[in-house]
Image (tube, rainbow, N blue to C red; front, side):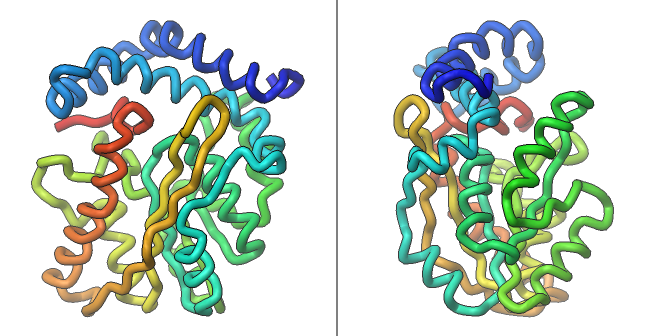
Amino acid sequence: MRGLPTDVCSSLGARLAPRLGKVANPVSHQRATELLKRLEPNQADATVERLWANVGRTFAEFAVSHRMLKAGRVAIDGEEHLTAALSSGRPIIALFPHLGNWELAEMQFGFRAPGRVAVIVAPPASGARAVIAERVRSKVPADLLVKSRTVWRHGLAKLREPGGIFMVAADESASGRVWGPSLGRPLRTDGNLGKAVRLALTTGATVLPFHSERIEGAHLISRYMEPIELRGDARDQAAVSEGVRLLDQIIEVPVRRLLDQWYMALAFRG
């Protein structure tokens, strides 16, 4: 794929994924369809087709990700919010959902703050794919924290470094559940949002929400929102619950708007 022109590579992924994705992952397809029928009852079928196309593009673009960044194919909206957070000297929890091509947005962030970022990564199950992923991700000047029981302690250590940044997926899937956004479910404080809130309250970190959005073809934009200051004590359950409620609302807005680009719809269960 790396030898193909960028647009061809991305388009090939879009063409192959709807067929290969549904055939190879029927349970994921069913989960996404059920969620979309609840949220967009009149558009669910068309939305899930676009979702698979975006997933295909995202996976194919991984092979040409650095080329896309160098070519300026990933624009930035909310530059002032990113600049303000980076220049504040404060620790930052960069909070994102799996929208658009989230890998490119993470890489772009890493290049904007070299040496300051730590990000949780989950290596692919396939050995060959894991090697490729490591090769691409290792070119970014950031600490790659492999998902484990101790990864949050490493994130805490990063936030205690001067200007440290810990990148957290708001909608990570763990223990069979997509933790955020709630999308009508009761709020929980034991997922990534709760952990992010506790880290912010413990370290005084600013929370910087951002997300990737595919504009057209192999062109995307990273959208940064205004930094958030959480108040309270990490040991106070009421303060943690309020922080989770706020972040859940913030993340839900782009997810609902871009359901056809939300990768975690394939793992969502009510």
